[in-house]
Amino acid sequence: MNRRHALRQLGALSAAACAAGPLAALAQNDKPITIVVPYAPGGTTDMLGRLIAQQLGTALGRTVIVDNKPGAGTAIGASQVARSAPDGSTLLVATSTTLAINPWLYKKLSYDPAKDFAPVGLIGAVPLMVVVHPSVPARTLAELVALAKSRPEGLSYGSAGNGSPQHLCAEMFKFATGTAMTHVPYKGSALALTDLLGGQLQLMFTDIAPALQHVRSGKLRALAVTSKKRQPTFPDVPTVAESRLPGTADFEAVAWQSIVAPAGTPAPVVERLSQEIAKVIAQPALRQKLENDGFEPGSSTPAQLAAYIRSESERWGQVIRASGATID
Figure 1 (cartoon, rainbow, N blue to C red):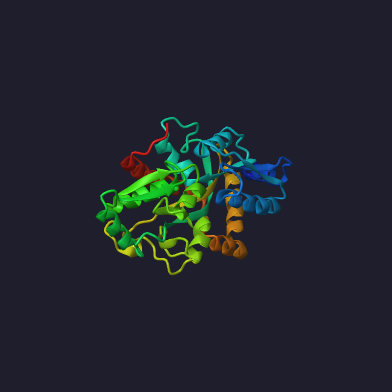
Figure 2 (figure 1 turned 90 degrees about the vertical axis):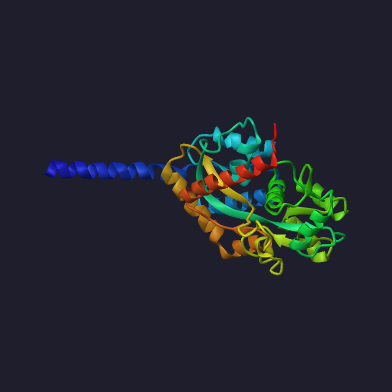
């Protein structure tokens, strides 16, 4: 009995050591943690990556750096992380484009969203806002749809490029409401927004932050937001669903951000990272700052993020197939 008891104790201690090993390495390793941002510096995703890097470094007692790897619709940065060592030292700020949209747009993709990553946690989402040039005689979403249907040529809208969240959100709305709209893709949302301000475009589904000052100054008119609930920055702007247009009762389209690690990263490491990132997002001052910039902060467990990625991939896949969007 004493021998069996000793063996059980030894087994328990071994299991605890195996579980603690990765966590100890995560906290005590001198190797910096790199958070890869698959976009150029200065945007929303980059800002989030830097906020998390600063707070995560403090929590873990590790140096955490941000490495911007823009290009190929986030595929360059995603591919780098997919090929990295699965030890918790390399993470990716993965967006809806990276994990739910690209697989349907590209015939050949340099990474597999379903197999190459271990979901860590959600960061939050960026709702889009339907904005029109003041010359457009529509003050509600219903009036915009009626106007589009009254014109044989429809309306023209700009986006950050073919297959971007702005493009696909507009396509989702177009198919839901039967609205005729012509897509004008740009190399970045800033260029599209400039032409909208100049009157070369009639409307745009845009991130709230870059449009915020223009709506407040009257240079653009906001008709709706694409989230489930109204946004604190514009509480008087209704949601698309509140327009009560046919086909929009459950309308929601947001560009979301998350953190993932290379596939094979030990579960205890993934869980620890998930918990620390959730603590960062839960900070009241940080949440207030993000909400003021039109961002909806949020968090999740690794399992919840995995389920969300699957559901979002299925949903965006339907939109992309219906729109015919593709990138060779």
